[in-house]
Image (cartoon, rainbow, N blue to C red; front, side, top):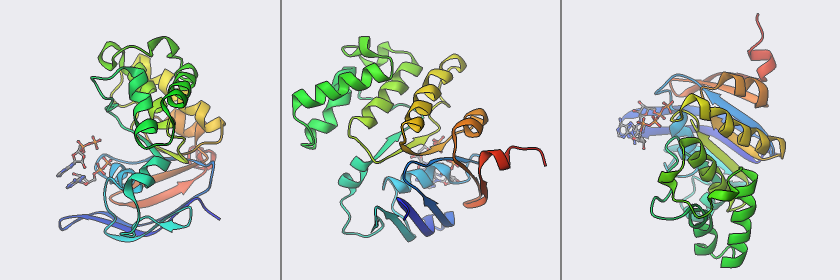
Length: 229
Ligand code: ADP
Ligand code: ADP
């Protein structure tokens, strides 16, 4: 029984086919890293998982429900799939604490006290307990991305999706973000990660998918893929 089961997924933008029939199964707790050239459809795939893009054809089962069905509540679905973007996407005019507590309160998932408690725990976990009252623009890129991860976790998602989370960072900040992601993986979070960080793929992924031109061209355990032939 898979947590996510994708069957023959196609995505078109106009007449351009960007995803060309993907079949992917993901188990609960699995860490899947997707790599591949720019423009191959990795970002579109993640955005489709989160219903930021609508599948054109095919099925995407999540906890047994086909999220491509019109009847699916997009916002409820997104609550279960936390997403982290290359460009952080924090709310600039809110403090870090407000960034973390907004969605849980707004969706009625938690009351204000619970949300603040949860946010405080998460900030501790990502090493930013002292930044609760700071505004995003006063933080480094690495700190902002750790806040973005904490914000996604504040909703208690079932799955975390990462779209090149370290690509916009100065090199010295990449490690602090990858460390947080590695911790999450160890704790059993189901994760789908698009990244160019091969060391991370090799050390943390349960499975690596190579995407090229809208299809998975190779997949396997990192130990099998990264060993010399
Ligand atoms: P990757 O993440 O692998 O770099 P993307 O999923 O971002 O690839 O893009 C795959 C292809 O889809 C690219 O050719 C890109 O220009 C195109 N594309 C992505 N989003 C859109 C969109 N909203 N409208 C039209 N074309 C798009
Ligand atoms: P990334 O570097 O993360 O792949 P892009 O610069 O490719 O991001 O895309 C940024 C945004 O523009 C995304 O929302 C993507 O869907 C959209 N986009 C990408 N390519 C196209 C395109 N050819 N036409 C319209 N929108 C696009």
